[in-house]
Image (cartoon, rainbow, N blue to C red; front, side):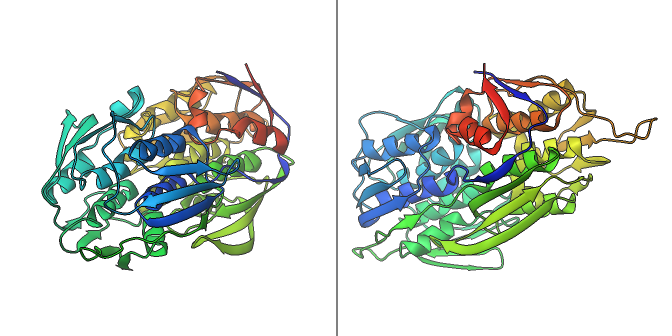
Length: 444
């Protein structure tokens, strides 16, 4: 699958982007091990999330789709999961695999979790090592999937000071901590998204947070454990980021994105775009399922380069491909550092983004932990240099694919993006939503 975008068409009107994938995964998992029936509205029906649905169905959880986006989960309680008949295939989802292992390592039966070729290349030692300290028994393929989890006598709570910022690792340990003997405490290296903590509280877990520390006290043996609840999943800020950048770089754009999650532990893309001079207006603030949401209006603006590093990275790691596109259209240079984590995502995003920018004529330097992107400059005739069209390879990475599709709206020529099939893992309706917003996009 290839996408082609012709330049010049502004993004206008009001749109609703895909539901939040991170929250969708977590809602399914916690609803499955809660007691009672949970109803989740606006669940994201992407390939990644459906892999999580199938995994828990294999473990005996009844999960019903009531409408396009409304689902019902008949929870089996913390100790009600059944041994799956075969390995659990988590597809392309690193989030789903890392989180589900936290639950599996506490079961009284053995299991195996696996994924596609991309997921099999992603490191899992960050969860295997602390889980092993809790008493889990996990075998891997040289630190990568598939992972085989052998039934452990019991888990014990630990005090874990995380060496790197990772919401997935933190969430995995908290889920395992539901079954542990004693308190599990996680101290973060830097703030990361707190969707798991918010949902655990909504399901009735005994959890406390303060100053970068999360403390989970497991239910007493014989206690009810988690209790079912109803929730609504907000629109995904990571998916919104592509349209925010697209509107910023395309003249004439005036676009409003509705009901977007603006959780302060992952709103880094908004802060960074504002530093770059983006014209963003936040309105209609509300709370949905314990998550802050709002409408975001974005208009075309002259962006300027900036330095993106430190805590910026943890709060906007998934939005870096989109921000790199914004940097290419900004005046001056942008330096992204402390982002070595990008090399172990669905692809090596540092290398993939650098190659894609170069294909459009953008000067870029690749570092071990980031990129230096040479933005637009004043030419000899006083006009700003332009970003050309071209053909880029997404490296089979959904975020690179969508980011560079948006680059086509502000470029001086057509942009073709190859290997776009993985977009379905996080934003199945991307093309139709982009067309509705005005992007001149077609599937080749």
